[in-house]
Image (cartoon, rainbow, N blue to C red; front, side, top):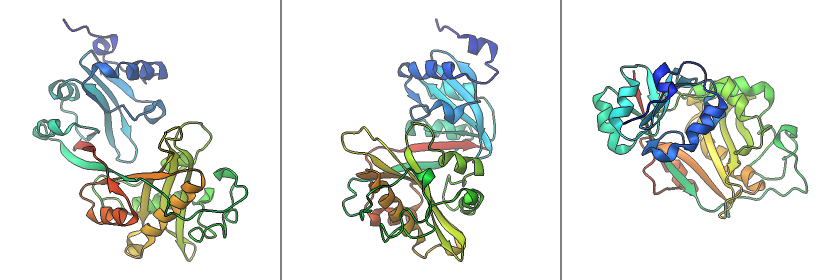
Length: 303
């Protein structure tokens, strides 16, 4: 007989506490599939536990960038998960197993993105920044890296006052690639917050400008610092204003990001791309990224 938790009985209204999140993460091994493996509490603080049993967990919140209801989940069968979601519309669900896609499509969901992992196993071909000393990013000014690497030039490091412009650059690319929504001002500000000890570390945004106007941006940082294979440069986000595309800006931005991360000890790199974004994939592969062996992340949405 299935035992119902207090959250299932009462409808689980109210914000999820950190203790609830930790408890849920600790029991992930009893579920066949889940979307919480790479999620930290800070990512979903304020979300609500809608259902929690030994066969399904459903956590609901709002996805700022997508502008819709957002579910995190854990389940043993797709039927139980779909039953928990019910007929809710305008909702996004991530990490849907490939074998569940057809069942979700029958319930009105459509694939929003299929993210594939791409890796660059060595940064040996990336130029080295030569500097006797370098401070943390939040203490840098434009001159700190000047002339240390020919890929980094004055003005490349983002200033606080340009956060809104960076957000505008990403939003200008909304819809150009499946699943790409752009980033809010809040997201950009959070990305630049290096006050905590959590990975990624050394987070930064590098920019390209023309006549003082930001034309393209790349968000990057480093994770896997304790890995035996070495720290990983994460190319989190690349965006170029549509009117400035096809000028080699995206390539330069990625090369700058790799150079920056190599200075801080990265020995390899990672990024993700939707499988339908063939132009971006061609660029990434030309820089030395290769697809990983895993199936990737399937995100689905019902409008």
